[in-house]
Image 1 (cartoon, rainbow, N blue to C red):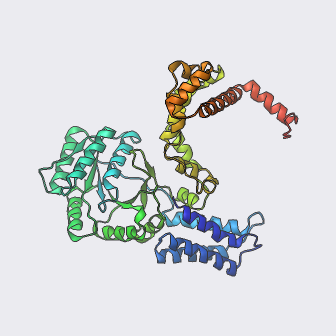
Image 2 (spheres, rainbow, N blue to C red; image 1 turned 90 degrees about the vertical axis):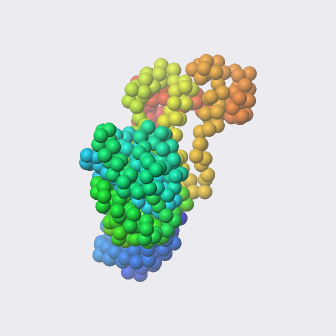
Image 3 (cartoon, rainbow, N blue to C red; image 1 turned 45 degrees about the vertical axis):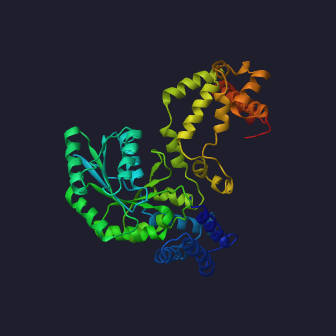
Length: 448
């Protein structure tokens, strides 16, 4: 995500590397490259021009501190302006009401139906709501079926009526159904088209006027770049939506939509979709996105993802096993599953400062742990709980069963043993104190 834009920003800032002070000449040269980077990312021309003008004005009006280089100062200013360009602060979704009603809009193929399912899952699992999904696409039976499949996946009821061809009547009936059955949020998925047309616009306007939603959201495919911004403007002029959803942000997106859309329609980006799974949904944080665009990582989001998967009781159980040197392959497998739930491995690596650049060009499979899992799954229950019993013949059987080599099995067992020893050492406070004393006294060649 945004890899090309990040690279071009980095090259632009190299112009100021080694410069003793900020001048109109070197700032102009740097910002010329910044503007080119934004245009290459399919950012609106007017937006790119105004952005660089603001950065230039701030840069030339600011004194460079002794401890801060001109390059660092310009990065800071660009970071501030990028965050402001994308909205400044995050914008929360409004779902209050009896029930709260959220109306989805957007073109066909933008990911609107999938996002409706993700949003229902988000409200159910993270906000404690009882959502109802409503299928109002009367033109595509497949869209109705898709919504039912998604609803079944996440355990959320879907209201539909394939006999009724008036989306306004379906939406109104769904809200009455929600009130009578105790649903507190209604998410209405409407029809899309391949392009903006008058019939679609009139229809969604009629639905909005009839159900008076708490929140109207516009879903847009971020991979369409500047076209996404133009479509957003057309929808906003007609239905005056409340917020934008950027889908497919994990794809080969140049970033133009994320950087332009707020400036053009003056509406916040509320969520971003980063995959097909129902939990692949993130609140949009402009400052964190600016961090990632400028190659600074996003440690806060990484920690939040880890905390979502963190189980305090499980952690205490593992702590006791580690202290007794009883941590086994079953525990290890459980930890792998927790890491996998955090999301795409390449995206996670990109959240670590400096890792995005280091991982450039490195292909990380979506299921990076599949070989490790295959080896562990090929072990017997006894071998998983007591790794010391794994001898040569057992290794051969495990390798054959997992489609790997004996060398792969040996490598995993060695890494597991090394990790277990380190975990045992670190869990023992007395050992940690002895290590600190040795390090302080220079006993480990590391004076403090």
